[in-house]
Length: 248
Ligand SMILES: Cc1cc2nc3c(=O)[nH]c(=O)nc-3n(C[C@H](O)[C@H](O)[C@H](O)COP(=O)(O)O)c2cc1C
Image (cartoon, rainbow, N blue to C red; front, side):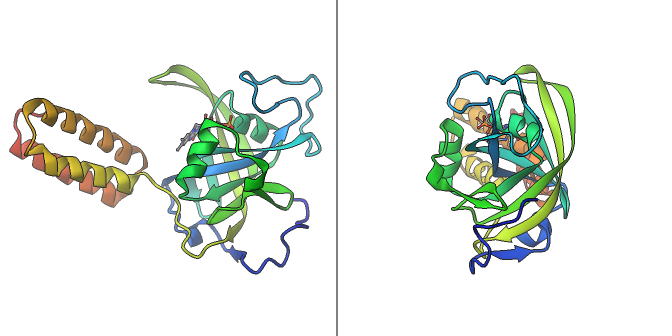
């Protein structure tokens, strides 16, 4: 990793041991923002990525611009993560060409939205060991790519190529002592409970639509939730099935 020139000595930065020190748990999936350096030839703001002829995989091969995108991060253990990246994004191309990237922990809805709908402007970024991160992050960690496996996955969108990236966590930095990684599980439980409390009052058609939403929340919890969140959804569903025999 290149030396860090910019942020040495910043009193707000606290180095932590590993992913467990920012409340990540083994086997759980978190929604994060990944920041990367753009690769030469992958210009931002183009509908289709255009690869230049002379791509090299060394770290000088950057066009100076940076990228941020919301990405799910699976905590494999205290020092390793796994990403499932769809083909065609800046993030996957940048990670294929540069060894290092940063995972930012934030719950800022504007950052999630802006980085999905458009490109974040330069003022959102700072650098740690010359790798971009988000100034507004509550915590971030520096990752080094360990291996990349390419697969074809069949899902709702048909068949798509994906890269499964395993990366080693080199450094974990806390910027805000209340940093909590975002996991969709608890929101799915709360949404389900809200639907549950309304189901009794609803007419048949509305009840069926609440039931469909609860089933969707159950799908989310099965994919990303903790054991407790899975248990919560099971209880909600059991209760509804007992009380409303017409729903299945
Ligand atoms: C909350 C959230 C999580 C996402 N997780 C992933 C993911 O795990 N893998 C992926 O390939 N895309 C994921 N996406 C979609 C990418 O963020 C999206 O394709 C983005 O436009 C890629 O930006 P980029 O081209 O700047 O890399 C996610 C989007 C959101 C909103």
